[in-house]
Amino acid sequence: MTSEREDAAPRAGTDGLLGPADVRELAAALGVRPTKQRGQNFVIDANTVRRIVRAADLRPGDTVVEVGPGLGSLTLALLPAAAHVTAVEIDDTLAAALPATVAARLPELVDRFALVRGDAMRVTELPGPAPTALVANLPYNVAVPVLLHMLATFPTLERALVMVQAEVADRLAAAPGSRVYGVPSVKAAWYARARRAGAIGRSVFWPAPNVDSGLVSLERRDPPRTTASREEVFAVVDAAFAQRRKMLRSALSGWAGSSAAAETALVAAGVGPRARGEELTVEDFARIAAHRPGRAGAPG
Image (cartoon, rainbow, N blue to C red; front, side, top):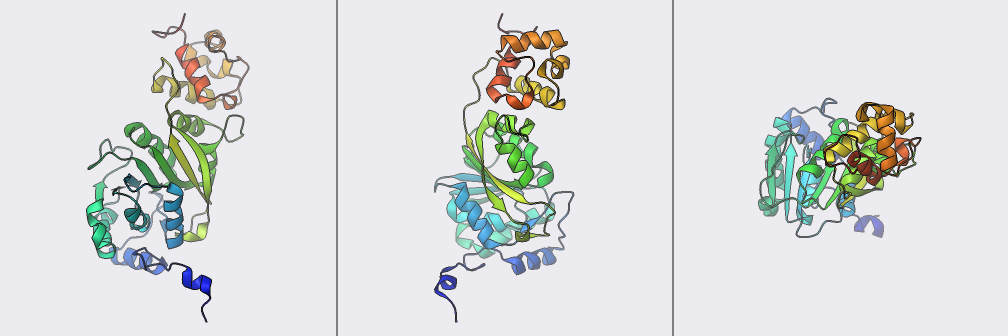
């Protein structure tokens, strides 16, 4: 006898979504075996993709960009929730098969779907309306650079919900003073406010990864007001965390030209020379970049 709770629970496949058997059958038909080189771990649990879409807080008018759609598990869940979905896939075999999967499972929504074959790190434009949301199960080996590239390249992205390795999720959402606060934390903060939005178990993937996963929600914010460019600020961030155990006076000596020059920039920016990178906000780094000795336009 089936319980009332079980009757109410949606079943994989009833709304076009892929279940474990569907994923394996599709992969077998295509001759696809997930590769570590491309960080491929396919989601096989329909409830997980439903949860991701709920956490993404999409609006009916959103244009979503998805990176690394794979066999389409998340794509199929996104299409009913958004006005348009553009998937960026680097694997030629997977990219060739995805439109047919969408047409077979959600034929009434094919006009909402577009596919870009290519490397997300090299994409500079997308077809159709400008994207307003990024929702993706990012390949874990390139998750941070892909996320930062998308945020930098598409300023119309207002929100993002990404699934990444749990350790990376912690770093992206970390605040100054945290032991995991570092380069990803600061650079993500340049573009957005980031927070952890949940944990994902290993069993929902095929093949199951050797690490836990986490969801990170990002909401676009204005970058710090500064005369320094983003590239100049990020150069300070990279220098500060390249030797994170050192005080900034020493860690930034190469960037500034000497320890004395670094101290001058730090004092001018209102940052103690004995501070360390993990103590600073993105606004602090922006002020330091603006005060680099010898920089054109640096405050006197």
